[in-house]
Amino acid sequence: MGLVAKACYEGGHTKVSGGHKSSTSECSDSTTATIAGELLASGGYKGPFEEFMARSTEWNLFRDWRASRVLGPRTVQRVMSVGPGDGTNVDCELVRSLLSRGLTEYVAYEGDDAMNKGLRANLQGLMGDQTLKLDLKQQFFHCDLPAPEHNFDFILICHSLYYFEDRQRCIHKLLSEYLAPGGELLFLHQTEDGIYALQEHFGMQEHPHHYSTSQLTRDLRAALDDLAQSHPQAYEVRTDELESSFRCDNVSASLVQFLLEKDHVDERLQKDVQEWFDKHVDDKLTVKYGAPHALHPNLAIRVTRACDASDLTNLVVSKGHKSSTSQRAPLASWAKICSAPCGLRASTAPAAPSQNAGELLASGGYKGPFEEFMARFTECNLFLDGRVSRCFRHARE
Image (spheres, rainbow, N blue to C red):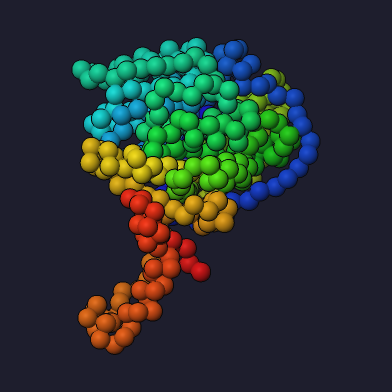
């Protein structure tokens, strides 16, 4: 199911609007459902997906979220997107914003013929007189693809990871073979609430596309831990939540088929799904939007690959990009994804000092804090190693 994103403060796990607590549950029954390839081949994906888009607030929330921050390095020359559809939800807006930052090539993996043709038409329509190399591959991404000739400065996986086979290997491949030093990989993925909870209720726990943010962060952590053993550079992870919602009145049979990946929906099932949504109507959102709305939060996970020492000078001088590096320990022992993001959070910032530097020195109060700073900082070891970039461990102990 092609859905979208989450919201952010630069470097922490934050939410766009309201307070949301996500939950996970484990169940065991399976249900007969159409696989994504069959939905695409039958032409049954586009119409219900467009209905979903028209009902969801996530696209506007994602647009506002993206506009408030710089995604990827300051200069983005090559972009790759997996499962972009026809580009109307995210990719066209993203490409338009990156054309002014040096974008020269856009590569997409989109397996549906109609979506692929729509994507080409939409991208060509926004380019105007600007030149942009388009490489739109009519195939699904998988972990056995050969490594690309050139890495990508920005990679977007927008609600398509549900359909991957061997997701952990694919994540590992994207980070190690496709993402350029200094580049960013952005996952947009639904949380365990909203549509995911609907799927749980109607028995999709064992469905191959029923893939939660908890599973995604587990696979990402495993891939990063493995990479930490073989790659000298580190990967910074930041997560943000976008508290989007879904207009849930008069849900059609085709939309139920899309949400539950059913090959057939009878009146009884359609009624049951409508009753489930009726029980999950959010009163505040209903007042805000003037129609019944249920929460459907989404998660943005940003993974930035730190620069190799050999690449750093070129990136800093030629592209004006400031890189970041972390300890070489595996991610699992460094920061837990989501619960302890790697970006500096406002909540961890110290209170304003009551003494200036001279007063601290005169009072002898400088030595202790400086020693704590040095214990947290990687600069000295990197200096001894002849490395260029550095970082500061900021987690509260």
